[in-house]
Length: 432
Ligand code: GLU
Image 1 (tube, rainbow, N blue to C red):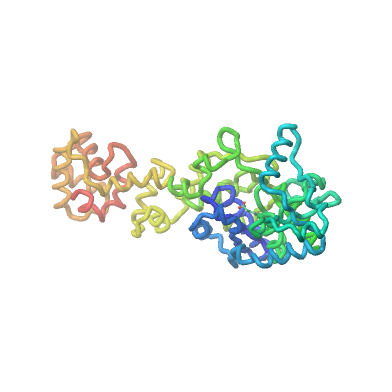
Image 2 (cartoon, rainbow, N blue to C red):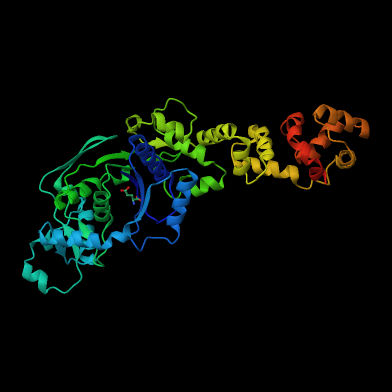
């Protein structure tokens, strides 16, 4: 079983989407189930409605999941597991206050050494623990030996006990920390492979250690994806607008192109333009580069245009918010004029909007509009053109410039002869 485990704490980041896509692909390839687990245990950071937004995005990308879980539903299991670890003395109650811990952290920082928990509460006797009525967290005892795992992308990873440290698994309000809830749930859901971002690498030994102490001996494989860098070579953060899937949609990028781009990024693929379905045939985590990949919006724009070319006119119409597939045909004529829905849509809308009255061609436009209103339906542009020329007596520049303005609302654009077949059934609406 594979899983996508987003936290409902903000807009979906392209890094998260990439993780979702990869988990989906590998689950399909292995014939295993793919589940979504909303990691909503950090109540303070949760944002109302973000879970639904994430699920809608998965839906738009066609990432179907077999089951949906909310981590908070497992709260009592997390609590029971933590108490069991306490009873078995694999964990201990920690009464250190946030202020004490903070000043220890500060002290370590000013000495220039990495902060480690002092170990103070691990030494308390049972009596001291029982008579203490102050709030406490539960800390897991650090491992005695190194923790190792073989990452499918990064290779062998080794962590020393001190780097794992005695860490908190239950907060003072008795909610589980991310590492504890995640480690327990991956076990409960019988997860076989975890694909996630590289920012989680240091969590992995902690999660393995948790399951070791619980006594779960089934090995879970891991693949940590290199981070995505922005155009300045820095980690792509919330401040980079292109990191938000929502923003990319607003800018008129299509799910097909975004998915293509995220699979292509830092990967060796047999081709450059492909669909998610095609990627199922050849995708292999082993081809993912160990190095961070740089986000290149121009590449995404190129792919967006390529996918618009590939789409049939009905799909394309829908992507532009129209039901009539003739609009999709029209869009195809405009693909050289822009790369995104946002760039091309105004050009399509201009065709159907009122045309500028104050143009230097307004007289000719009025003449042409009259002629079009009384014209019979012509199949070909040539017939249409000859009819209008004859009717109005206009020719050359004086004919083509105003005709273009009248039909498209723009001075430049695709050949009128290419546009005509797709405009001809709307002519009265266009010149109204
Ligand atoms: N909830 C974590 C996040 O959104 C992901 C945890 C995981 O994949 O293990 O970053």
